[in-house]
Amino acid sequence: MSEILLSQLAHVELLSPRPDETVRWMKDVFGLEETTREGQSVYLRGWAEWLHSSLIVTESDQPGVGRIGWRTYGPEDPETIAKRLDGTDEAVGWVDDWPGHGATFQYRAPEGRHLHEVFWEVDRYEAPEDRKDPCIKNRPQRYPGRGIGARYLDHVTVPTPNMRADIDFYTRLGARHTAQTEVEPGFSVFSTLTCNGIRSTHDLALVPDFSGMTGRAHHIAFRVDQRLDVERAAEQFLAHDTPIEFGPGVHGIDEITYLYVREPGGFRMEINAGGWVNTMPDWETTTYDAAGGNPGQSLYRNVDAPAGFHDAWPLPPTGAAERERDTIASDRLRPFYGSTAGSGR
Image (cartoon, rainbow, N blue to C red; front, top):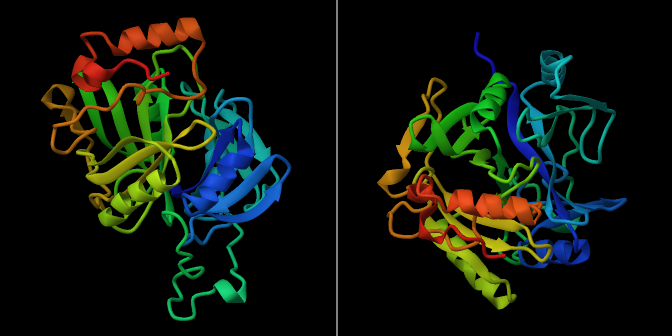
């Protein structure tokens, strides 16, 4: 029997030590729409998203990622996942409701310990009359023409100290492991997963964590329509005094045009477009050899990521940071991380 338990990556909670500046930047520069505020959190969405919110900015001492939310494929699926994890160290428990969605089951990945939550009941965005699009009914609102116009939440990338164990866990919940890069057989340094059979690239990516910490995050990505929009986004970032960290360029494994910056709270955000389309339910994981030029970073094999690009948050304390930098800079990992593996901190 075929099984799809999760339909989409619904939201990611971004932790920010400068929440007011982060929210203002997300609205004015990234082009997100504010839905509501509650407590220390502000709920935002891409202009073409039907759900209540896809990015939750919450005040915190350090940048990072909190809750990662998934909508299920049907109303009974949250209970199915809860029963599957009952009695395990991964199960956290039920929450009656959050702003934007109803009864929610929370769990943690076994190794990375990232907090995930699944739900079926959702609030759909209802635009006021002056924001509705009278012609294109498949849009929840008119195109606002503000900032870079981020349209949809695309994916989240997180480190894990045991990639294989977390991949096995996510696939038990119905994710497809679509691709990976190895520095040697059995030692993966990058993996992509998607939760359903109609996803273009990936909604979850994993990278190794060599710090000894858990619960860290590398970046959150949003999508625009066309590759040209990514180039225009670069102009918007520069016009708003937001330095570009990496790109524009084209990733090799998923063929998306990418651009990375850091928002005012210090966390890395990606804007992207394009990418391959994989609708095959029986797709087998593609394995790349990092010695072939790290196609994950560059389709054209001609660029290395800049120093500091492998930073993840929360940043590790001094001893763990040194251990992480030394590991990344080792000869064993050089085929993937390249000669610019040092930290930009």
